Image 1 (cartoon, rainbow, N blue to C red):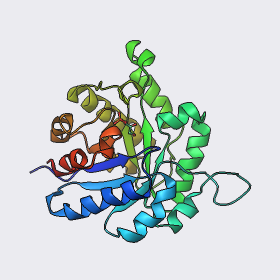
Image 2 (cartoon, helix red, strand yellow):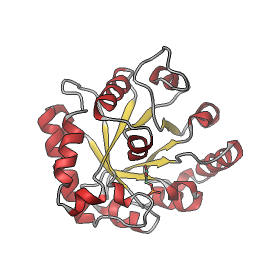
Image 3 (spheres, rainbow, N blue to C red):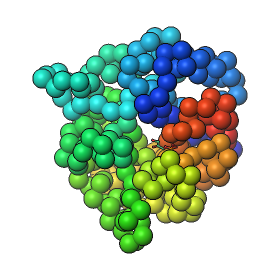
Length: 243
Ligand code: 13P
């Protein structure tokens, strides 16, 4: 039997209170069917009330600031997220790199802050379509990893391979393409620090309740980061059931 995988729901900027509560209630009702571990990353406004009400669900944030307190209007720190029982933080999602101009030196500081606070970072990397067409996927990943991942860290991190061209497009790499990339990522991070040998490397980009079956069969894909399909509770549960 395959080992349990990690399924992360990235709700992005979706759901108000009631929809979020209904979603989590259904997850709890169906908990006996669920075979994989999972994390829900709601909009920040919803985390506190969900985490108070659903103690058996792990919650994550979609972003954080690198400092704990200070004059940063509109930002949320890791210390604040920890204070509302958040356990994971997505760092470096391509939508934040694009819309909020997040660069590698900023992401390095965010990763350091998450790790220092003992939360688990889910660090997103991946190439765009131009780089893929030019055969530059590995170069892009190498730069995204070696300029951001802390060298002397002994705590756990999670890497999400999310090719930008696969996000929200219905397109995905093949299982064997993802496996090759994941092995490459593992090689790079293990060179950065041998303690990253057991790092989970998950895949994200147009994951649905059908293609997830094949992704989860692979021993080199440790889990999935799900966007659109994580808003549809029945489909999301069927990914959680899959082993
Ligand atoms: P989709 O699953 O909607 O393609 O989004 C993927 C994603 O960006 C998850 O972080």
